[in-house]
Length: 354
Image 1 (tube, rainbow, N blue to C red):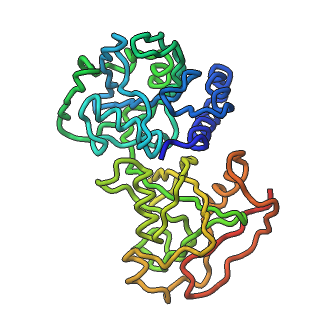
Image 2 (image 1 turned 120 degrees about the horizontal axis):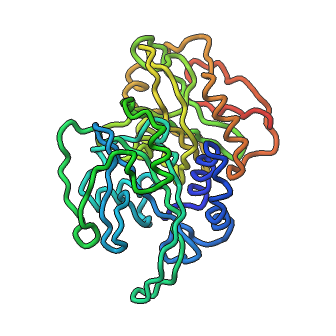
Image 3 (image 1 turned 135 degrees about the vertical axis):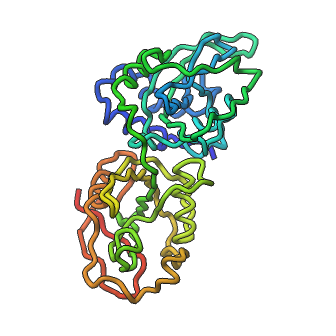
């Protein structure tokens, strides 16, 4: 399924929330998002989205490739494809196609799991041989860290790429990218990323999962939490992580998950753990099925903590979601407590009043 307009708009607006001073210079992109055209399609010559992968190695160098078509040294990247599940996934696919570096060899930089590190608009010359007029690329660049300890094997896409180069950040080809990279604390190793889903329905309710009360054995015991979990080796992107967790924990398949933001939590050791949050609408009339994880099935449902709370970051996420213009919701919200039923594993939490 092609990347949705809402997915792209939410990603851009999340970026602009961090860089409000760039709203004017990204005006052409915002105008394109207001038009009823497929901004993800390379045949939309009023301007379309491309995705780039900014990869930093253990020495703090930035990966560049020589693009044969333009003759320029740039970050790996290119057009989106209908099979791309998200914008970061498009960047990872281009990285693999152009350099042979697999998605599993990199990890998203903390805080940039779903949000572009940089967005750039540049003009593309007309290509009469391909019947392509001059147009603009709206380039969304996602930041990754090369986490393999060994030198990664590079296999170039010979028809498009003439070579690679690892450059110090102060020699990054893009001025806007260089400016941001110089402010980045490169010596900080990224933490392992996690992903959760903020699922809502048309009644203005939000799906929570009741975690069993086993202190020291599971995360946030006895608390209501969003569905989700940690990235595993087979997960190419964090969207793959959250989709796998939704299927494992509740048998859910949400058609359109949209990157929403990043939440920060502390583990039992006190370390800060970034959690990528995806939002999606539950469109089915029935309640999600029984839990499928081994934690839920083998631990049983009889040892829940009597007093169950909702962690503060979750309520903050809900309030932020209600402010997002692209997310439909009911007209009225009445806060209510979740029924204290010892056998309940899932519940819909009514959202706060706007």
